[in-house]
Length: 233
Image (spheres, rainbow, N blue to C red):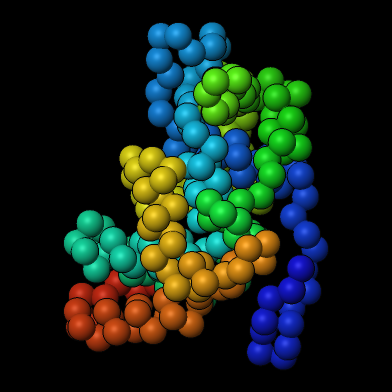
């Protein structure tokens, strides 16, 4: 995998199946909705459409797009000015950049197969998937977090390295709110780089564009109101 840098392309290892599984686990824990009466026993949360799961994974894997979405919410008054420091951290800190793993664009937006990663979670009893539909109706997958999965996610928060995921996904949850998958994808398509990416090609980063927007907003609100960047909120 390559990313453009000051001295040319930066090469980094591809994300592993285990890293993908960890992302899905923390997304289910932080962004899942409460289960309903007819949902599987021993489950505590659910994401009811893969489209939403893929959209959330995109923001967790692309800190610059997440920063852009948080900045939009600040501009609209939906998030406090304190989040400007968070946006700056996402753009300038090396830690979010180390977790940058682009996704290719397909017909319904950013997508990467989740079967292998979800199989890892299922094998350890951390998550489960239920498919609805059949011959006369398009099958739809629902993704459940089990009680054991919630415990595992909470344990990650105490790990010095893996706790990054549990903190970052809180920002993803703030960006997404309660929007369904279709709405999240529409929001992501509003970014020009995302929308014009050819099918099957990795969606290009937008660091520079978000930095320009951040700089303009900091000038507009004045230095006395701009928080100092020092980490995530």
